[in-house]
Amino acid sequence: MHPRCSGGRPREYIVNPYRIVAANGNYYLVCNYDKYDNLANYRIDMITGIRLLEAKAKPKNQVRGLEHGLDIPKHMAEHVYMFAGDSVRVTFRMENSRSLISQIIDWFGTDVRFSDTDKDELTVSVIVNRDAMRVWALQYARFVTVTEPQDLAQQIKQDLETALEKYESESMEE
Image 1 (spheres, rainbow, N blue to C red):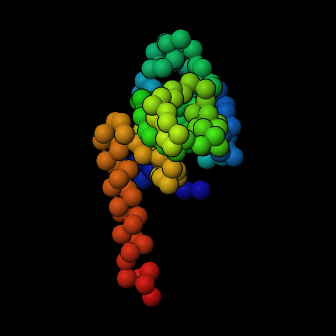
Image 2: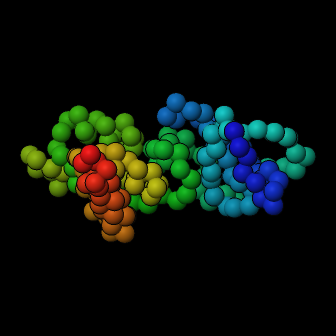
Image 3: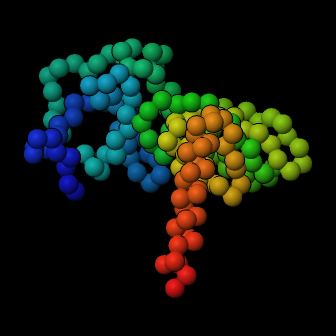
């Protein structure tokens, strides 16, 4: 491991710990990095040099998203890859497939809205971390098309165009 440095010295993080969770084969500390007012997720196997400080932890009501406590199932559904940051409502179209619908519920929990259903496609609306949705949409690009927010849809489109260019490059032809 190589610690992040600031001014040539390993950077220290003061965090307010709230919960340990398991996701994607790793354990994460759900906490607040004291410099900010939001939640963060840090992989426990990447944490070194832990020291307990005398100072009391920041009260939860001063952390954005914890005003009413920490709802772990909701937090996990909105942070599918454990990226930190705010969640947004994302809408996408997908194939109307029982197995894909099960996947959606597995990934995003039961607070999912399904609408505009026909025999071939349906619309899905979820609240999720933007960066996590970007990665998830690329993983499921064969089956889903993000429609809202528009800027996220454009980012994903650009990601796919960049990936396609890599596969169309001369190095692939050799």
